[in-house]
Every structure is written in C-alpha cells, then in structure tokens.
Image 1 (cartoon, one colour):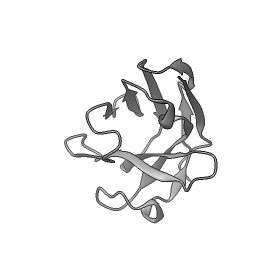
Image 2: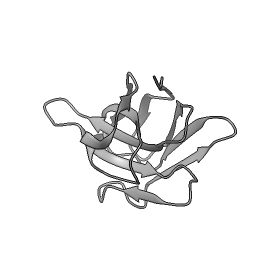
Image 3: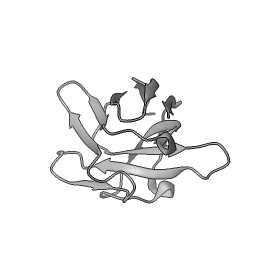
Length: 119
C-alpha cells in the first residue's frame, strides 16, 4: 500500500506562487489532480519515475512545473502566476502505468490540500 501525503497548500493572492509537495515512495508515475467545487476532478500535471518526462493540462502550461526528488521520495508542483480559477483541492496520485493523464489509471491518492487564490 502506497501512502501519499500532500502539503504546501494555502491562501495566496492572484499572481502569487505556491509549491505543493507530496511524500511518496516507490517506482510510480506521479500525477497531480485538482477538484474545484461543483466540478469534476481534473488532471493538472504528471511526471515519470525518472523525472525526464512530464505532461501538463493546457490550463497550467507555462505556469506550473512538476518535478521529483527520488532521493527524498518527494514530488513537487511549483505553481506560479496563480489565478482565482486555480482554486481547488489538489491531490497527488501514483500510477503503475506509463505517463498518463487518465485519472482512472492512478491507483493511490493522497488526502488533498486546499489551494485558494484570491482576486
């Protein structure tokens, strides 16, 4: 059983930055998803086990960066130029499949961390 623990959420003004962290062990593709009130959980970004391959949702390209430090068993989501529409609960997730944006391909999920962007 893989345990995932997110941290780093909070309240920030529009245009600001936050860095989310996810403590995770094991050889998995790691993804970040988010769920805003009244919306479906959506893909944000993913990184391969080696860190050499990444994927992003169009809505965050150029603003968010996903990375990992396997020596520290930690995955990061650096979020810059935040917008009010980025407000959501952010989840990290682990997949045993190759790099994927498919929510159903992720087997393990963290409890989520709230990100609120004020205008």
